[in-house]
Image 1 (cartoon, helix red, strand yellow):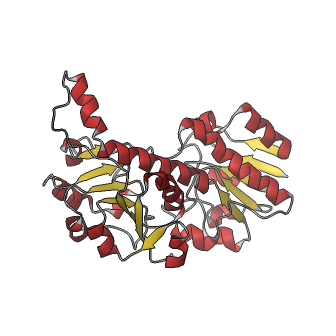
Image 2 (cartoon, helix red, strand yellow):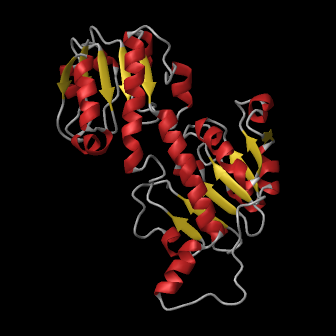
Image 3 (cartoon, rainbow, N blue to C red):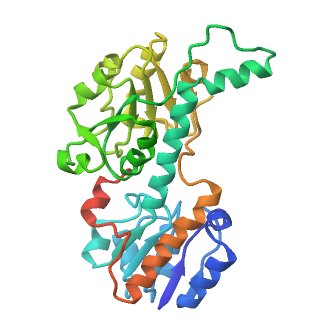
Length: 331
């Protein structure tokens, strides 16, 4: 097998270990590309894809466009060490019969873990008390932070991340509701989740966690009307994509001090220094880092390497992404 590794130098630092490199080398004849975006252009990929059976990819790699695929005379498998493949694959890739796997499950598990951390930080006002202590303060006798136990939590979207999140919340005895037009009530019930309509979720859940892909359908789906339905003292968490929420409407809602928001993603990234979100005490801002922590990234690579072994051995692929699934993944 001829293998092309297109991981950027930056990605290699945390997604590869000496053991993983050795494993790749033992799998076939390997070509390693060096550099960082924007070094990896469509022309570079087109030039090196000829004669390649398996391509291992990561963040910042150009799409497998029709032009790239003109030279892909032997390509059979794309193994993506990140989560979503929406910006990587094309109709032409699937039409050519190339199979696609990704580390989406590894990424989803880490994002779910981050949601727990963000929830506890917001409920218990951890950032406030840490900052107050550093300024010489101490708790007053009437502090009003809250906990996660026995809370009702609404999940907007029920893809991979909520399916990891639901079991993680079980020890907290949380009551879970979810909205997703593409997932039936029976599937949600398997995770202990009640399927509800979107309006009901926003009015009945004091905690709402957003897990929608970024598509034309979901752009600004969470608008002024839905934001106004959130209960007083409610918490809105977004680890999906910034444009799913109308950010301007969210700023206006936050200015009332009626709710809190925990935002890991934004409509424009990096977030502008002038963004009004930076001035709001009830907005907990994280710079898009809910994905795998440094210690977990090697598991993303290992997951796709397992499927490379499965592919070579004609075994079922555990992490395969179909063309239909890719369409529903966030861009």
